[in-house]
Length: 341
Image (cartoon, rainbow, N blue to C red; front, side, top):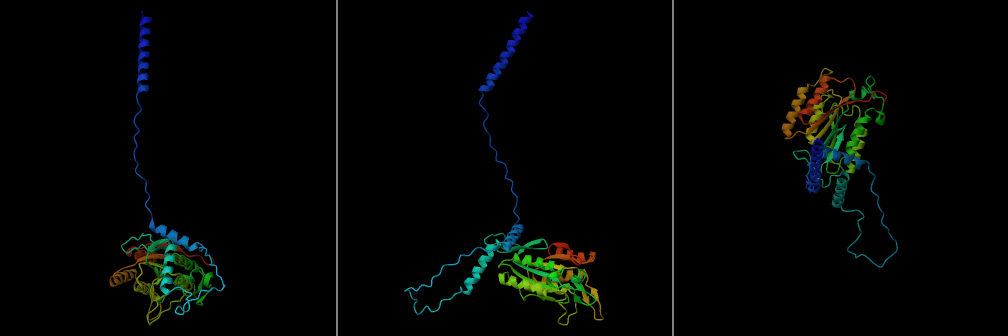
């Protein structure tokens, strides 16, 4: 009896398993459900894109130009008397328009429409950088301190004899010029620019900002290489000298750019009537910037570069950080090359 019961139970269990298998195999598969996942978007960085495109355009080779075939064979066609001599060059307005179009294409700015608004450039503005500070605007000013300390501490200038020990491209100071050249190469015809060097006075390359045409950029390169040098901005106009950051800031606001790159080793001093110099207080320079901004109705973004030629000082760094912070600019500290490098 127990064997019979076990056999019946085994058959019942086996029958149930077979029934479950048959039912599960005959059941239709579940319907496929498709879900749309949220796309992953990386926001573009227009400023870095413009700087990258400008650098690429600066190093790219010129496009090939095919010379047209010409024939000296005489033909029966003659020009009417009223036509006169043909001009060999395009009209000035056409030439300027063509230059502007080519410049915009080279810089990647034509029709890009990437302007930020709020005084930070239009769709035609270009991107540029100076000592790794990147920005974009319709106008930019390069300001470089040429006081003796910028050259003496790196071995370019001898304080005792007051003579240059190295000149031109042999100077440690040449690294600053090269950075300025790279900024110039990134400009296009829609971006106006200027150059100011200062010490006892502030000297501007031109009285107004100039468009970034090829001719203006070439002239600016020559100016930087030949004129932006040790003590090339002595006192003038009866005003006391020193290392006059205040004169430089006044000139910057007079020119009225949107962006300023200001490079100095930090010393801000003025000459005294009895001889010697005294430091210009940081607060005095901050108040000057605030007053000039109110008078002009706008304040440029001032990016400051602390070019450390000796031992960096806290008061000098606070000055430059304060200028950039008060004008929505950026601050960089750059170590100058040592003597003989």
